[in-house]
Image (cartoon, rainbow, N blue to C red; front, side, top):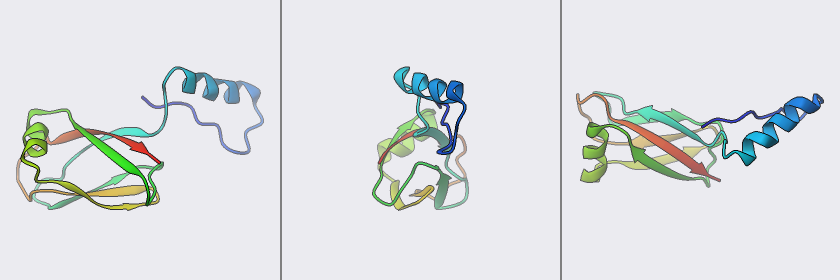
Length: 104
């Protein structure tokens, strides 16, 4: 669940308060979802809160993703500022969708 993130230069007190309230409600910008690319062995996921030292947790949200997850045929092969790469089976299977959470 995404939250409101005021910019570092924000001066509107209402926007700052809304961002703080979102945090207290459990919202953050450290989560998202993606679908593994078909007929490719890697999927690059854009995630603005990702960094080289981040810990990324995946949760399958479709039956095909659960099969891939259970088979152990995927791994996080790269982490960088703003993205991470998942290496997986080069398959024509669609609907391999995952949620992710990032801990920095």
